[in-house]
Figure 1: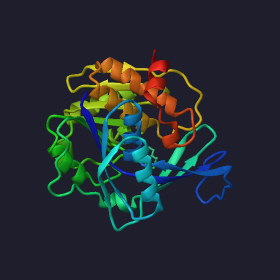
Figure 2: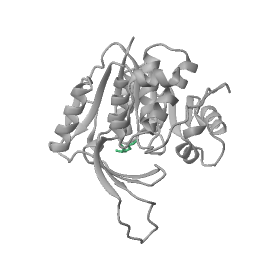
Figure 3: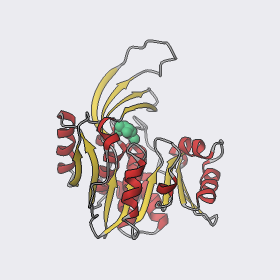
Figure 4: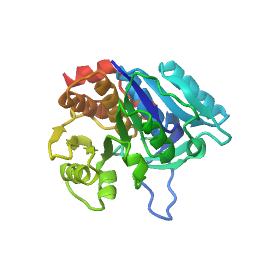
Length: 294
Ligand code: RIB
């Protein structure tokens, strides 16, 4: 089994639990507040490790308590952290509004994440078979890393949705995004399968569009689509569901499973992540994913 290299963000998440989202100009009283580890890069690295992957992480932290807590998390999860940098900026932070249906709205303050760069002379571990990135850290750093990883499957999670730099798209093999992000990128509303096909044809890359309970749609530029539907679960908090999907996808890809099995296990991981509060506490372990998928 090859290893997984994740480049991406860490955020300290502050979650405000609400009965509903506020209207513009309205003041609401929260039902509760909690803090969790977060950030799409860190979440995906932890998810991949819990799904059985061997994971190394490239990230940037501030010299502060949140940065120390992040390092402790990754060490506890068995993630290799030689590529983690300490930079002169506060560790990233996010405020997450969570409504009674488990849906969220997220505001990020990038801080140290915005300073992430590929160290000069960086050489990736030679056995990397899957690389994963998102858009909470500079695209130039991801492009520079992906350029060194020609033998790996290089996956870009287009989250938060943004235009992709040509040099990053040129070094990316696969795009993964949720249906909202896909509609933004495609500049139109459509069914998730249609969005996946359109984006695959436009970018000439494999594209996976995730659509919550409707499952995930993996389209190739030649028009072939694979679909997987997740098991039904009681939804508590959808935060981190996409990250659980990405991490599981990386781990089960590195383990060499078939596309159908990889997609089925990944939507199961995403569903499991909706059953608990917080991003990192909800990221499922391999045994739980396999048990629910069987
Ligand atoms: O995908 C969920 C994550 O998005 C949160 O942990 C938050 O930090 C933002 O990065």
